[in-house]
Image (cartoon, rainbow, N blue to C red; front, side):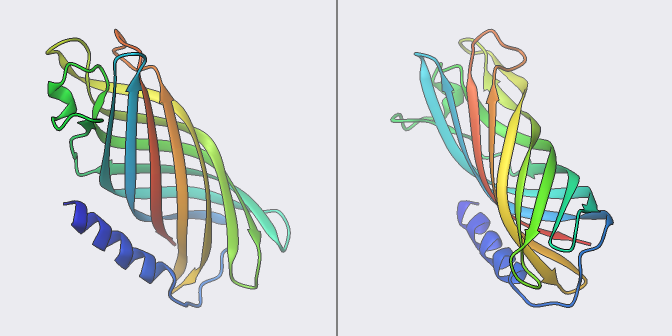
Length: 201
């Protein structure tokens, strides 16, 4: 599954760099996203887990034109994963069997964020994003107690996009950080580093 995720990301990256004829205009846009995420979780003084997973998601946003060279917008994203199990750092066992109250698995990531874009050439834009995020997955919440868990946090990102076919192809790097969780008998953090390719119409 890990290699399949790398291959899928490489294919999507190549496609997003292709030339096209589309132009970005003010209004609603939607699309899909394919990516690769690195996951890191830590509980203070107890343990640390890490993992990686492929992601597949959807995007919905609204673009407001600011001037000929820049724009801003509001965007929502929802990414699902393949459910790869995270492992305890330094211990060759699954995190959910190591009695470490960390995140064991991420199943979905939702983001609502503001986006600012600026042209650097006639058809290439650089992007910056900041907003709030929510995550759902599986964590250990006490010895032998494995539960569905959610958390909220912050998200930031940078990227670039250009016209591709009938839409826009984008490559972006996103950092999500979550502190606390529900249920929260044990305090834990979760950090997600994602490389995403996005195609919007």
